[in-house]
Image 1 (cartoon, rainbow, N blue to C red):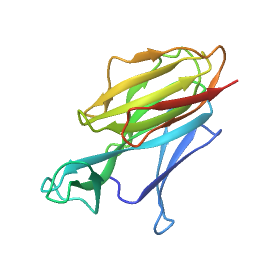
Image 2: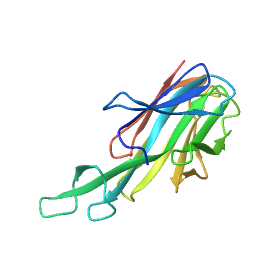
Image 3: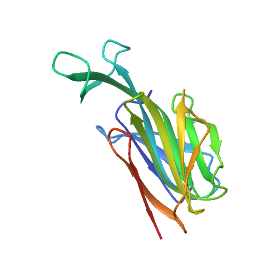
Length: 173
């Protein structure tokens, strides 16, 4: 995985990875054929005692004697991008696109990666010019069986998700 990563995207169709601690440019991902509007790193989290990670954190509500569950966060292994030509999932170790998501049939203006606690799962939310949001479960770095959320009458331009993954908010025209 990539430690201390910051991902940026551009109208030049590129996605660039940086080490945010040192400012060093790490890599460039190319494959989009049109401007890229949004990008998100997909973090890996394992229960404490699992594979080693470089940063620790905790989640209130369950686990050890203090009512908290500890986690070790590992470097990201995937990045998700959205642009004029749809969304893509990239493998960071391979620096290659592993999945093209064309569910919107056009531009993806916003995306978010979030986790739910019960059950512990990772999701990708995408929002597009088609006025729809899709929630994709992410398994082993691949988006599966998206669930549509409808209600907007025009472009959806922004998304956010609650920390516990139970609420997704969207905005648009």
